[in-house]
Image (tube, rainbow, N blue to C red; front, side, top):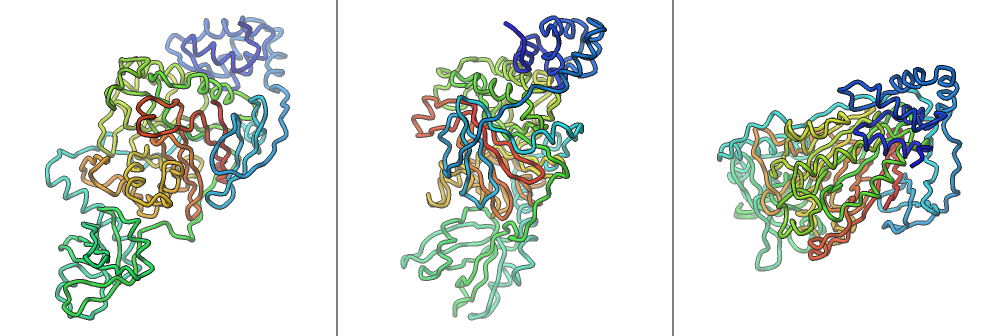
Length: 537
């Protein structure tokens, strides 16, 4: 096969077990004889090399043809001339076009989409600026990673510790808003007194007259609060989840046995929050749920995505953030073995590693695990063990736990796979959270400042000395996956993105009525937090 394009060069290098920096690939593609140049670069690569650098390729070209190497290098560095389709705009809420380029700089749930024909990508705003910057991506900073710090033994005391830590952290965010009194102090106050309490939601029930009773628990005990059905705040009761932290204000009944609620307060993201942005034009690709090993893994779509990353218009993409489920896993759901293309979990990761080699070798990659990956199911999930890290070592990816906050170019990205979204969608009214609009469910996690507030049900909690699932610092971007649906918007200026998947509908998904959004790659401008959505399936 001729090797006249960077994408083909990248695929051939991946086939031979290498990835490469984008400029190195461009140099090979621009050589007089790309096939011979590639052979020379591979043959002269160090035995332990997994990535071909630009300097190595320049040296290989010079050794192979000293007279032509300079001209070839100059021509290759100039890159191919770009021709871009003229975009047309439409407003919509769900992706339907085969290839899309959608920029989000509008209020939540209002999007503008540009569509191209014949699968050719639309020009990415500012891509040449990113390509000319000459700066290498900065190593990401990671916070909140449980990897190597897990101490839980599963004993009762561990559960007490993690919920006490949750209460202390979230109550601290609420204490400035209400005149908090402990549960035991409220129980001793006379009827008719104004009261305020901060606690974890211990129980939610309805009275015989249709009023809501919310029982809160703090470190001293519990106390019941009633939200009468004629109050406007009953709409907020629909949003409550067990175990979340809440502040209430109200008035004690005459017998002081219950308090009537006047207002509810969530930890929430301040409406005045202003996110940080990068000081240069640079982009990050947000993807998740690749599911290598499944018969329905969309390998061709992934390769189109990897090919696009080698093009000039993707030159500003310097970070790839993967929010879990790299592989399909084994035994995750009933009869899964009937839908597997690769039945051995280690072979699945080997294949995933091969696909990862197709993306440019100079990308900074950060990965967290998901519920299909070979880590413990209970959250927080530590990153992969050393054996799996070695398998995926070709790209030198940064592998961290689920959840983790990753800071790139000064922009903080809270990465969470998203199992708790199932719980939120099941518990909340459809107009507030649904699989068709997963970002709205994410808004509620930001509002509660906890990525998985409800314990039990779909949610498995690993008790630790601290609650790693609390959102202590407001992120600039909140990135999830798991539900296989594309959704994005801004909540109090925090960009929330659920990035879809790379797996077509399986028989199991069909049985539970999941219609996945496949082959989407949200691309975020880190200097503006505008979002461009590209489709490759």
